[in-house]
Image (cartoon, helix red, strand yellow):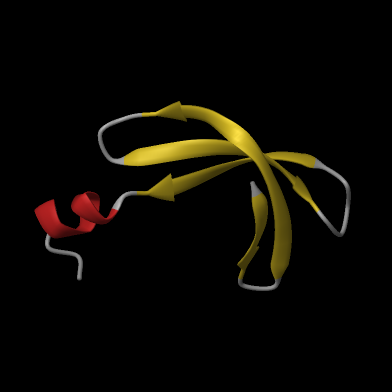
Length: 53
């Protein structure tokens, strides 16, 4: 899927694991450590409905 930088960490996102009402979870690899990780990305609608903008 591609690389994604979150603060000081760099992840290579492989594929989507699952999706729910407010977030999607991806399987990825921490490029620095080689560790497998799960990355939860909240959908924009979550912020709209909860007034967190």
